[in-house]
Image (cartoon, rainbow over all chains, first blue to last red; front, top):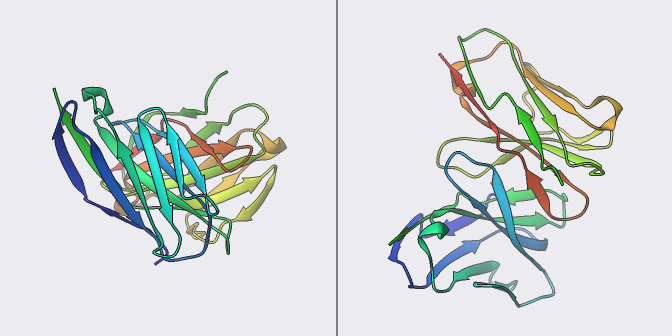
Length: 111
Length: 111
């Protein structure tokens, strides 16, 4: 399977703490993206990092990409209760052009 | 700007019945995707359209699933006949570049 893997599957933290989620993939990629999904809703795009980039920031989000290890991480700083959601990484395969999603990390931020 | 619109939001049917889902993408987005999302999993691509053409339908179970995108705008995904295992959320997404924009999905329950 080309599906990526995410770690941890579930994460529970207190408001104000940082949350780190990791993602691994198996194929060559053009880019890697992170999406958020609130319960019962569609996915919302958070950030895209291209294969020639190593780090990218957007507000409280920081994404790193290590193509040699085929892995990425998403850091959410100073978490808020509203950050409670499932977070998915998705890698854009350079072979097929498809966007392949991982199984997601469920984040709970306790107020 | 309106997002991706999907209807219905929820559908409950008995097995062996037909069902159809409708999607209206973001205006100007040439690429349209249908995904299947099982509980606790990431989305899996069923079919991708570039304008009116289905460019990737390798994961679409063609014995019971069909899709169309007439005039390269709205799209319909149909299942006939539905099976118990088809219970899932069906997501539609559209894009103009690498970022995909998702609709809220249709939650299908097959009894």
